[in-house]
Image: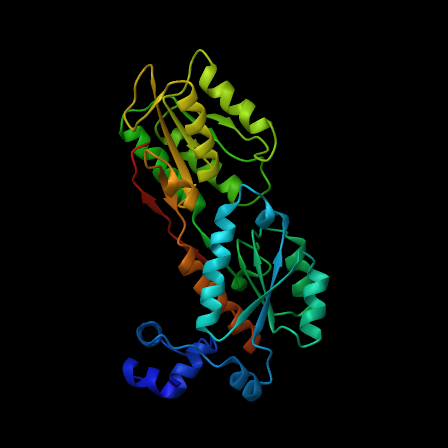
Length: 329
């Protein structure tokens, strides 16, 4: 199977297919969608070796594996890595896992071992972005880089997600709604808390925020304080599905019913954020905010390939999350 077969099914020229596979921005959105649909229909996979000979490129992208991806609680980034690997393969690329060291990734690019770098869990002022940008290395990010490199990132609208999930609880009649998040690092964690605070402010409700270190005993103590206090909340908005699972487990141990409806005693509503496998395994089903991982991965790969072709312009992309309605909120 060749790109000519893909072109025939998509109703475009083989050059258009080539442009899409190489992440070039010269193809319109409608034609690009037809090409991707044809690739999926035919199960086409680009021959990386042949492409490398033609382009003198490695056909590989570095993925620095940081502490966040290695953490036992961060299953969502592992799911994103799977989506990113699949997106890279659709474009004839392979991911190379490296240590979370921008200097190491820089050496790989200069040695011709990889063509660019894909970063995850990026925040404004991220030192990895500073190093790679200063060296002129092509890269793209999941997470916002800030105003210095706006063309290189894709992100989910974290604030809008927690606004929507909190408003959902308010609409169901909840008034004592707490937020359990993460110790602020300046990125998605801050945005999710901001969304909760905005929704509570709009409803003229008093916010109650706890942001412990999720990897240590602080999280368990914070949950205990929420559930064992005299004024226990009727609902808890959490910053991740992992935190939501911890709250659900603690509530069950205390004999609380997990339900979306507010109650003065004996019940608790809980919501998550991520749409991860952790949330999908819970019973009753978790109500959560789902991140469009596959779409983010696809757009990150397109952006890094476009950067490899030459510096690009344009703003970063913010994708809307989706509420997955379960039984807990």
